[in-house]
Amino acid sequence: MLKKEDFMVIEALAARGVYQVDIAEQLGVHPRTVRRALERGGAPAPERAPRPSLLDDYREQVDALLQDDVWNAVVIHRELQAKGYTGGVSILRDYIQPKRSLRPSRATVRFETAPGQQLQSDWGEVPTTIAGQVVRVCFQSNVLGYSRRFHFWCTDALDAEHTYEGLVRSLEYFGGVPAEVLVDNQKTAVLTHRDGKPRFTERFLDLAGHYGFTPRACRPYRAQTKGKIERVVGYIKRHFFVRYRQFESWDHLNQLAELWLREEADARFPRTVQEVVAERFAREAPHLRPLPAHRYDTAYREQRQVSWDGYVEVRGNRYSVPGELAGQTVTVRLPLDDHLEVFHGEILIATHRLRSAREGWSTVPEHHAALWRETLGVERRSLAVYEEVGAWN
Image (cartoon, rainbow, N blue to C red):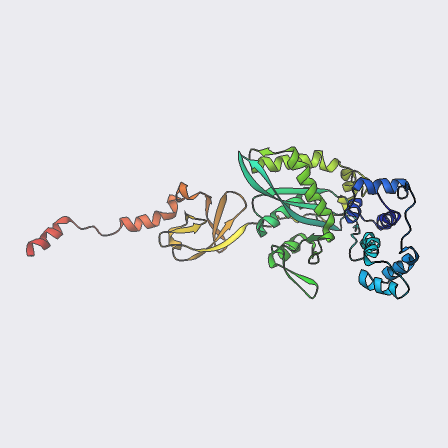
């Protein structure tokens, strides 16, 4: 049962904008208990009067010390003993414990942003079934801070290229770009923090410059900074991946995701904003900046040396390129699908479908036509020549 002190904590935190679920976690009670206490306007009336406590005459002094940011129970106990307190430290700890959530460094206060101001980004993981096989699905979710509209994209990797692709797809889904993008401290975007400031990867800065947003990063060990996206990740796991448990393919998974986003996620009514997400987004959309004319290239790019027989090796298989490039360096571009492109300088010289090793090498006959001509042009001698040589012996 809640005590009067507990309700005072609930009331103070609610007034500061702390989520009810966070208040409940801090007090060790169910969220319904917090909601009912706020609706009731006080703690439940005790059935019997509480027994007097040795601490009763010292509560105001304890509260004054807490207000001065003195939270060590042993230190407070010594202060009270000097003033005549004869009780133990356990009673004191029981009195202080529910108030610890009031400490500014411990409380999580909801932070609201203006329309078009901020997008929060994060990854989640969940096991599911695709094409009859249990796989680990990585999904990147991105939420607009003002309207709470979010988008997510499912894939099989958490690397930089997939991070950028997921963000680009979300911007295209929203139809515009916010002023800033807040990310966690994943190495795909943030190299390190120095003097309290993040150092972003060169390619993430390139992506930010292409779309015109300011990159932001959470303070280390302070994930509460992006509380909106943390809740979205949990929402996707508890709703989408509970409703849909099997998928025919990755494309089928992402198609169902976008359908679910429009039919269910956009229609939800968050208690924090007391408005339907789609309606709130309609007011936020005009504040988003327009998308650039060209899409950012999220593909892998790797350097390869062409072998003497006119092939490059990529992911355990070999792919042909024009034979005259043997020994030279080329650039392999791998979009996030099932094909590859090979460039010599800025010139596209070959395209292939990615193949598994068991499918064998991928060869375009025209690439090696010159090599075959050279082979066919080798001088051929009659066997009679060798017979004459044998006769001399």
